[in-house]
Length: 141
Image 1 (cartoon, rainbow, N blue to C red):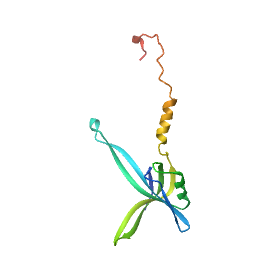
Image 2 (cartoon, rainbow, N blue to C red; image 1 turned 120 degrees about the vertical axis):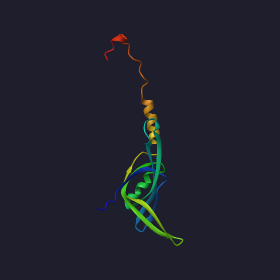
Image 3 (cartoon, helix red, strand yellow; image 1 turned 180 degrees about the vertical axis):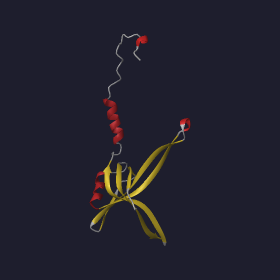
Image 4 (tube, rainbow, N blue to C red; image 1 turned 90 degrees about the vertical axis):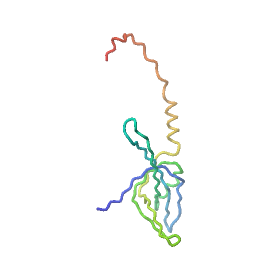
Protein backbone atom coordinates (compact mmCIF):
# COMPACT_ATOMS: atom_id res chain seq x y z
CA UNK A 1 0.00 0.00 0.00
CA UNK A 2 1.34 3.45 -0.95
CA UNK A 3 -0.16 6.47 0.77
CA UNK A 4 1.18 9.98 0.37
CA UNK A 5 -1.23 12.48 1.96
CA UNK A 6 -0.26 15.56 3.97
CA UNK A 7 -2.38 18.03 5.92
CA UNK A 8 -0.26 20.85 7.31
CA UNK A 9 -1.26 24.13 8.90
CA UNK A 10 0.69 27.17 9.95
CA UNK A 11 1.42 30.81 9.27
CA UNK A 12 3.09 32.22 6.17
CA UNK A 13 6.75 33.04 6.78
CA UNK A 14 6.64 35.60 3.92
CA UNK A 15 4.32 36.68 1.13
CA UNK A 16 3.90 33.88 -1.45
CA UNK A 17 5.97 34.17 -4.64
CA UNK A 18 3.97 33.64 -7.83
CA UNK A 19 5.57 33.17 -11.23
CA UNK A 20 4.54 32.13 -14.71
CA UNK A 21 5.77 28.75 -15.93
CA UNK A 22 4.84 28.19 -19.56
CA UNK A 23 1.08 28.63 -19.82
CA UNK A 24 0.56 28.02 -16.11
CA UNK A 25 1.58 29.65 -12.87
CA UNK A 26 3.10 28.38 -9.64
CA UNK A 27 3.04 29.81 -6.11
CA UNK A 28 5.81 28.98 -3.66
CA UNK A 29 5.66 29.76 0.03
CA UNK A 30 6.78 28.55 3.45
CA UNK A 31 4.46 27.66 6.33
CA UNK A 32 5.66 27.76 9.94
CA UNK A 33 3.96 25.49 12.48
CA UNK A 34 4.48 25.88 16.24
CA UNK A 35 3.63 22.70 18.12
CA UNK A 36 3.28 23.11 21.87
CA UNK A 37 3.57 20.08 24.13
CA UNK A 38 4.44 19.25 27.72
CA UNK A 39 7.25 17.04 29.03
CA UNK A 40 7.22 15.42 32.42
CA UNK A 41 4.48 14.78 34.96
CA UNK A 42 2.85 16.59 37.85
CA UNK A 43 4.87 19.52 39.19
CA UNK A 44 7.73 18.55 36.89
CA UNK A 45 5.78 19.42 33.72
CA UNK A 46 7.65 21.67 31.35
CA UNK A 47 6.05 23.49 28.42
CA UNK A 48 8.01 22.92 25.19
CA UNK A 49 7.64 24.27 21.67
CA UNK A 50 8.74 22.70 18.42
CA UNK A 51 8.85 24.79 15.25
CA UNK A 52 8.51 23.10 11.86
CA UNK A 53 8.86 24.92 8.54
CA UNK A 54 7.61 23.39 5.30
CA UNK A 55 7.96 24.69 1.78
CA UNK A 56 4.77 24.44 -0.26
CA UNK A 57 4.16 24.61 -4.01
CA UNK A 58 0.78 25.22 -5.69
CA UNK A 59 0.23 24.93 -9.44
CA UNK A 60 -2.31 26.34 -11.88
CA UNK A 61 -5.41 28.30 -10.95
CA UNK A 62 -4.97 27.46 -7.27
CA UNK A 63 -1.92 29.75 -7.26
CA UNK A 64 -4.32 32.72 -7.42
CA UNK A 65 -4.92 32.32 -3.67
CA UNK A 66 -1.67 34.28 -3.22
CA UNK A 67 -3.50 37.52 -4.06
CA UNK A 68 -5.53 37.16 -0.87
CA UNK A 69 -2.86 36.34 1.74
CA UNK A 70 0.34 37.77 3.16
CA UNK A 71 3.06 37.18 5.70
CA UNK A 72 1.67 35.98 9.04
CA UNK A 73 -1.68 34.79 7.68
CA UNK A 74 -2.80 31.30 8.66
CA UNK A 75 -3.33 28.54 6.08
CA UNK A 76 -3.99 24.81 6.02
CA UNK A 77 -2.84 22.91 2.95
CA UNK A 78 -3.72 19.41 1.80
CA UNK A 79 -1.56 17.62 -0.71
CA UNK A 80 1.35 15.22 -0.95
CA UNK A 81 5.06 15.12 -0.11
CA UNK A 82 7.36 15.54 -3.04
CA UNK A 83 11.12 15.47 -3.37
CA UNK A 84 12.78 17.81 -5.83
CA UNK A 85 16.40 17.48 -6.88
CA UNK A 86 18.89 19.62 -8.78
CA UNK A 87 22.62 19.92 -9.21
CA UNK A 88 24.65 22.75 -7.69
CA UNK A 89 28.43 23.02 -8.00
CA UNK A 90 28.59 19.39 -9.14
CA UNK A 91 26.67 18.17 -6.05
CA UNK A 92 23.19 16.71 -6.15
CA UNK A 93 20.81 18.73 -3.93
CA UNK A 94 17.48 17.49 -2.54
CA UNK A 95 14.51 19.20 -0.99
CA UNK A 96 11.24 17.80 0.36
CA UNK A 97 8.14 19.96 0.04
CA UNK A 98 4.38 19.75 0.01
CA UNK A 99 2.63 20.03 -3.33
CA UNK A 100 -0.74 21.41 -2.31
CA UNK A 101 -3.96 20.28 -3.96
CA UNK A 102 -6.26 22.22 -1.60
CA UNK A 103 -5.76 25.41 0.41
CA UNK A 104 -7.93 26.49 3.33
CA UNK A 105 -7.74 30.04 4.64
CA UNK A 106 -7.41 30.65 8.37
CA UNK A 107 -6.96 33.80 10.43
CA UNK A 108 -5.50 36.92 8.92
CA UNK A 109 -2.41 38.22 10.69
CA UNK A 110 -3.46 40.07 13.83
CA UNK A 111 -7.15 39.17 13.51
CA UNK A 112 -7.16 37.07 16.68
CA UNK A 113 -5.91 39.98 18.79
CA UNK A 114 -8.42 42.35 17.21
CA UNK A 115 -11.28 39.92 17.83
CA UNK A 116 -10.15 39.35 21.43
CA UNK A 117 -10.20 43.10 22.05
CA UNK A 118 -13.70 43.38 20.54
CA UNK A 119 -14.93 40.59 22.80
CA UNK A 120 -13.40 42.24 25.87
CA UNK A 121 -15.25 45.47 25.08
CA UNK A 122 -18.56 43.64 24.59
CA UNK A 123 -18.48 41.90 27.97
CA UNK A 124 -20.53 43.49 30.71
CA UNK A 125 -18.78 44.22 33.99
CA UNK A 126 -19.30 41.53 36.64
CA UNK A 127 -22.58 41.92 38.47
CA UNK A 128 -22.78 42.28 42.22
CA UNK A 129 -24.36 39.23 43.82
CA UNK A 130 -28.02 39.75 44.60
CA UNK A 131 -28.87 40.25 48.24
CA UNK A 132 -30.06 36.89 49.51
CA UNK A 133 -31.62 36.73 52.95
CA UNK A 134 -30.72 33.05 53.39
CA UNK A 135 -28.42 32.72 56.42
CA UNK A 136 -25.03 31.14 55.58
CA UNK A 137 -25.80 28.05 57.70
CA UNK A 138 -28.83 27.24 55.56
CA UNK A 139 -27.17 27.18 52.15
CA UNK A 140 -28.67 24.17 50.34
CA UNK A 141 -25.40 22.41 49.45
